[in-house]
Length: 80
Image: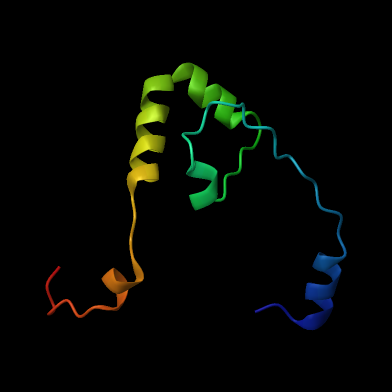
């Protein structure tokens, strides 16, 4: 754990933002409401151009994934 002087020194450093814009139409409807999306150094554009089908498949799989609080809280009977 960082001591207070070091923590304060690090907190005072300027932050460099390299996040870029994600093109419209890249993400499926409702995706950004479920997930926090970040793209750095043109990654979203590069991936969607070079591997468009795979990226769409990944986003569709993530968009269809849902886990309810009951799934987390219910007893599983020690089964995996």
